[in-house]
Image 1 (tube, one colour):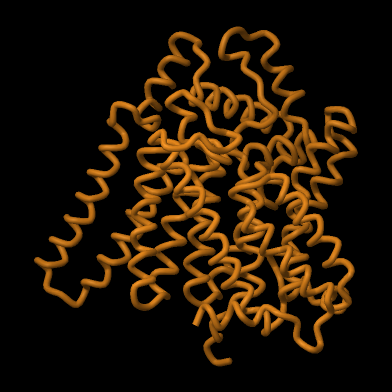
Image 2 (cartoon, one colour):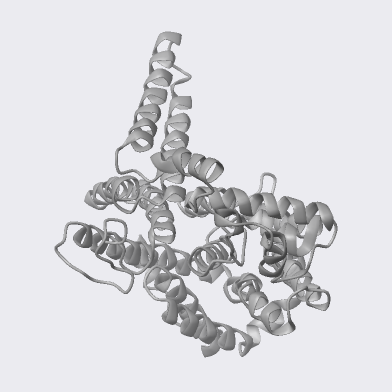
Length: 426
């Protein structure tokens, strides 16, 4: 089925060449996210130019507000960030550079306008399978680097932490490996015969990778959450059995989650196990640790939001305001960053509660559109949406290049091109 779907990616008689090429560059952009920053920039730029040159896009533009709530919400959020240039605390050049990191929001409405066609469903399959390929390639190279068989990739290093890195660091790479678990499992359920078994093996290999090889804390927590959700969902299917069986299944599910979490939390070389120690060292010794400075950034963000709760300090203002608050501090408490490593706080500092509300509205609009998809696109889209939202509490993922572009292009293509469930009574 998948081969037949992907074979229908050519040009239909009524479609412009610009539209077909725009679709190709959109899916290629998604495929390149795990492996090439330059490739994503080039392919996404070509996608935007071809989309704007497509007559179909301009014909569909009036339907955007009603037919794509997520696209409209993305436009409003970007427009609010743009308006805040008028009162942003840093210089115009710095604020504009920061705003450009959010230009990826504009791809959501463009993706809808390019893929809003019943004939575009094959592109959703192409997006998922192509992304699977580049993620598997990344995972394999991560393993070979880890075992010392290869030394590949621009991010590869010689120390224990950076040795497995290939194209991305442990934060971006770990989150993508966690998502590979979800992607492989979702596609396996839709794949018959031996292909499904291979995909289940890929999911297991990705789980081991994120928990014990890359060890990005965000990815580890997301992976454990995936396990918990999977076990809970499958445990509910035992409702038709007797009470004793249901209790045994529930106890088994809890035990599995607890064992995995405990092993990761207390493993000697686990970064997740170092979380409490890093916080303690920051609090008692003023030592610069990853988790410790995050707490300091969160404290500053809350203080700034309390001072300007409505509209914030403007786009790109975090660095300037953090420098002001840290000017009287020393050691780790004087640590600096251009963002608070939390997308909700970042929006709050830049746009106040208005920004937080707009960002949440955007996420809810995306979630509602994901729920309308059929399988496996629904599980794939919901899976990364969950990882993205969860990760936004510990990182500024919409701002970040890799995680943000993966979210925009994966979810944007799926909610625009993938088949949708028929509404009841339709």
